[in-house]
Image 1: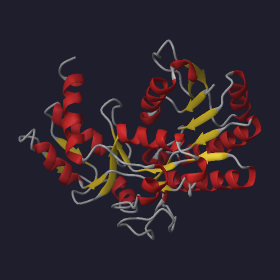
Image 2: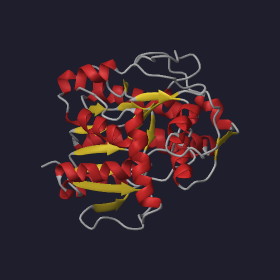
Image 3: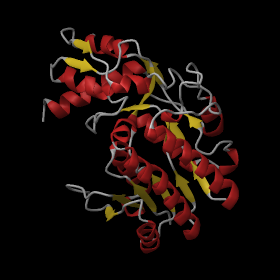
Image 4: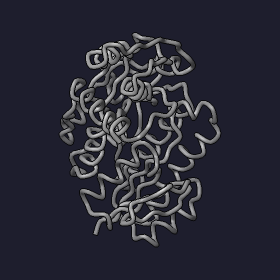
Length: 316
C-alpha cells in the first residue's frame, strides 16, 4: 500500500498537492506535515508536526506512519530566504539532507523534491535555458536548491535511492494568497484586479519570467512521480513551464476584463533577483521522458483565475 508523507504541507504548493494526492490515491494514503499546526485540517487526512531540521523526528514519523514515499515540499523561498539566510540554509540544505538520509535508512521507495528556477544565475543563458547549464545563483534560496539537486544526485548514484524532482517556475494559484516571493506578483495582481484596487508592482514592467498554473504544476509533479524510473535521464534537473510573460503583458490580459484596472511600477530588491533568472525554459526533456504537457495557456489561466477569485472574494 502506498503511504505518502508530504512535508511543508501548509505551504502554497503543499496545500494543494496534499488535496490532489488524496483525491488520486485515497485520503488514508496521505500523511501531511509541517513545522506549524494548521488552523483546520481535513478530518480524514492525518497531520503530524514535523521540523525537517530534526532528523530523529523524521525517522520516527517515517516508521510510525509506515511511509513508503515522500514529497519533500518544505522550503524557505527566495524573498524570505534573503531576509533570513541562516534559516533558509537550515531548512533547505540541512532539512533536505535529513530527508534523504532518513529515507535511505527507512528504505523509502521514492523521494520527490521540487527544485526551482532560482538555481540559475547571471551567467546562465536566459533564453530557452537548458536543463544542464551553469548554476551560479545569487540568493540563499538558489544556493540551497543547487545543493539539494546535487545531494539528490549523490543519493541516487551512491545509494540507489529513487529521488526525482523538477524545477518549478513561478506558480499561479487562486487558492493560496500571495506571499512576498519574487514571482508572487503574478498572483497578487489578480487579487487587486478582482477587488478593483490599483496594483503597485515590485518588478519592472518589461521583466519576463517563466510561469505555470497550479493545476499543471501539480500534474507535472505527480506525472513524474508515476513515471517509470528507467525512462528518467535526470534527477532534479527537469525544467518545466507553460509560458513566459512580463508584468506589463499580464496586466494587458487582465485589462481586457477590467479596463479600469491600473498598475504602477516601483521595483525593489526582488527586481535584482528576477534579473538573474531565466526569461524562458527549454522543457523538452520533461516532455520526452515523462510526457509533460501543460493544459493551461495564458488566456485560459487568466480566465480561470478571474472566475475563481470572483467566486472566492466577491460571491462568498
